[in-house]
Length: 417
Image (tube, rainbow, N blue to C red; front, top):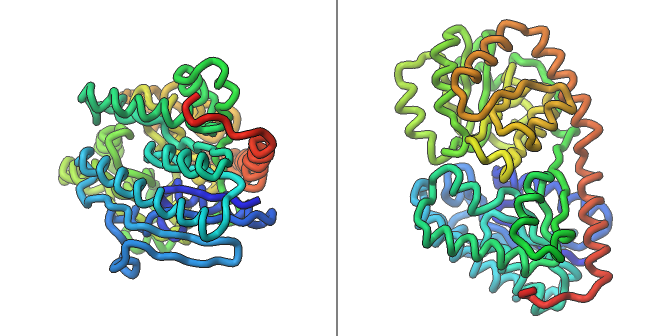
């Protein structure tokens, strides 16, 4: 099968969604499929094109299994300017459409098209290419937009919300199938499509590479590099944005002066958090690390944090959770109850759940965990045991292949059903 992929990130970019798509592609290739990828030049780490990749708007690579076409992301360095980001996504998506159509002419028509969101605009890109190619299209949803940014208050303009909501529904209807990471996300999307399309919303969870991410000794070179000793470490590793209620981490740092708190990542909220933490000696901000150091970074923490603001648990599944469990480390999650991450923690015994945005409950739970190292160790062992059997890349790739096979056996419906 020839698969054409549109995604915003791909190896060696460091974005979690890029790692996910890169590994899925690797599994498809191992099963004998040809894959052509249209993506952005590496830019996630500092929100600008990485050194060594600059100077060209388009870079094409021919691989043993297909090709990679990398495009300038057209994103500005200011992550807080949503209008600039939106225009960047539109520009990138328009360029991706051109390159996707070019591939269908030069490399022959794909058998199937898959697009990843966010950004939402890639959904229509995939739909147009699929329609012209007369092939089915799968829309892969990592976070539900615009719901996620509405819930955080990042977007309040009712006209922008109306346009984004229209684009969202159009993208779903233009797809032959939409894959989501959990039943929570599936319920959200099924309420937005005609009843006859509900079965086209398919749950396929994310996964983790348990061969690449393994439990390790807590006394890592990473600790030494950043002046961290043998004291307990609580870590948040991921996007430091406004969706994560990370102000609670500052309160926890004040309540636990003998614990070092590490914020490993970049994002729109990092500058404001650093400014608010100037009086704290036990909090360390670290830039995103190379992908090959992920296992070491995660091993450096004795407890990992997975917070999301109220209302976001049903529209987002933090993929970092799987990596933390693979590293054999416990989780303190502050997320809406009865959503995917709480269910994972309940099934695995790998951590503790508190209500989102509840600073008092968050600090109390953290204090209890940090005074019980034996419990942390047991949770870490349970984490690794669960993820090794429940979230393998091969199993997830096979679920996609089964969906692809069903879609390619039926004719392509109209773009606006």
